[in-house]
Length: 414
Length: 107
Image (cartoon, rainbow over all chains, first blue to last red; front, side, top):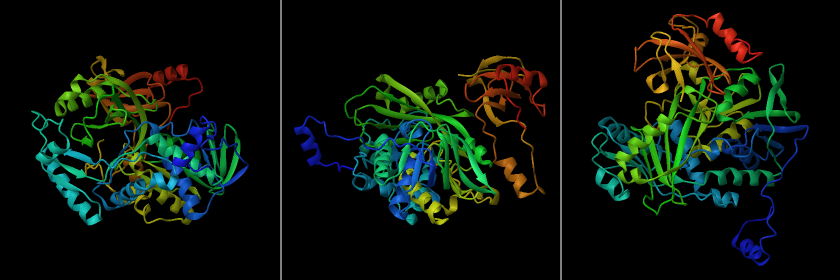
């Protein structure tokens, strides 16, 4: 792999940029791998990367039915934060956030991590109490957050309207080290590093069956032939139930559509990320100047990657009250992704009833921020059979009633 | 935007008038049942790619619950039936079979 650097840019400038190579090899499937990861999105690629980097396991294939990072990795609103209430959540999301800080250097790939700060607005008395509690919990967890008053919110976000009739801004939970990153670049950077370690990133390779013998996985069937493996990692977000069905077990997951939209590009007007969870809207400004807006999920099961217009309408209607200037903006694009939602709104990183099949799913509406931490923990789980980061996120928690309840903790906009 | 017909009052309306209630025909397991059965009832869902039987409530209308058969891959609505039914009616199943040849009914 040729290292990207200022010298490489200068060298290529001298020869009309004819010397850039492909960032990763277009691999053909081999007969057998030690580990197969299904799903070349952020979480799958990060898992493969840390399997190689932390555990020296490099005979790995990452197979993907579509194109690399074409699912939820390329469809989210790129927010990174770790201000969760429950200890296991804070641990894995904070691990992820800290890995994002050095990701560009680690991968030698610019993921444009921008720790610009994230505010979660408190717009009801209930939220004020909730976020104060979260700030205290975060202090114990070693996550730096702070509850700030309305004046400080106004200082950080001059375009905000503090005294909206329906949703006045009463304060906010401020995480100064949260921010955004370029989501495609995260997938591309990991893919390049994986390919460099000798792993095969195989696109347009759809799994059609999971083969096992005596309760132990032996490989997968795909539209490009059978591939054998010792261990199988399923990291396919919205399609997890479908893959689990092939492997012969069920999941406590429902797949629903989550939508986002962007406005026309405008001059810089807001240099932090603002989330308003009461009204299901969140907004940041991209480097291109577009206002990136995300909303809530639809209520019904859906695999179509498009959602209902009235959810967009509700989100925008609420944001217009909090950010009056948004009312003059034209919206350019709108899209949807299929998110996998669990009963307690926390992910599943777990062994499964089939030996050597591992599953990483259930990130629901907030998976992008967790990518490196999820990959780090899941790689350890796959290599060693357990990991302190993932222990609490096992499938058995639903039977044991040991929930990691972020749904009532309002850690995320649902 | 889904267009659904309320089986209780017969009104056909856009989905904003309705509230989705999740998978239909779950068998309830309460106190005294095994942990597996209770988990199955509370959390495990079929979540199929394709034909899905589900509960809806006519929230901004007559307020009644009813059942809908819908395709999660195309958003096609096959029809509504009574909330009191323990299984989809035969007539609806054959209509789905006409639209999706080879489709096998769920448990």
